Length: 285
Image (cartoon, rainbow, N blue to C red; front, side, top):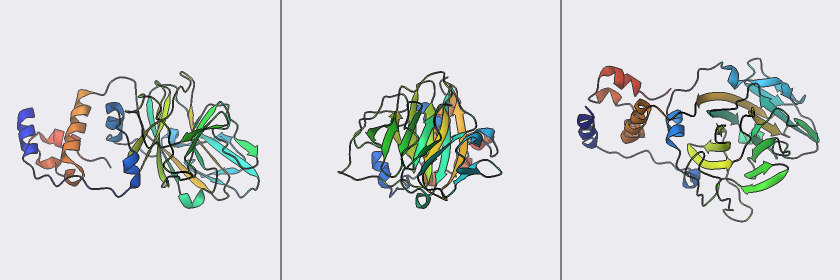
């Protein structure tokens, strides 16, 4: 069966993958097979409690929506405000989606993770998330990484030695003096609680490990901080995995999907395999 499938796929007309005009693609680094399988798996259904913002671990200047998946900062001057997710994790590999429009970020818009003890409100305007030893944040406007009240440099890096989650922290370097990459609305947080690393994916590009040496066995929560009135931020838990290696079936499925490419992803019903396997290979919704 494997030989037949290999011959059939090699004989298909290769239109090539759809090209991306995003400049972020040039900053991407390879993902691990564990993360790749997760990214190609069906996301968790809507309504999962891991997609909820916390009602108690939240600045009083943030208002929660009835579904608790969205928060909006009220117009308050000279205040930096944060909010954490309702549920944290202390093991496994996890993926969250944060939706935050660039038009509603202002300065000091920070996305990352924190422990249960991170401050969630402070006077003045600053990068609140990452401003103490209990939080780690990526400031979207300036691309700065923050932890312990200090900037750790720009992210993503131009030259990175990172080969995937757990592969080490990238070498941070400036693209040009004072420049910053424009970050679109959708940001994925990749927290490997087993390896103690945090990474980000933007526009389909994995930027490598941003933070390493996060505390093991301590619950960490997705979190954001903002100073802009009217900033609306949505959270969604997409998927998670244990530290066990991916199943062989999942790896085979990933290889086949990559071979098909974006332009042939809907041709699984033409593969010379049983219908149940064709169904398994259908693109994720």
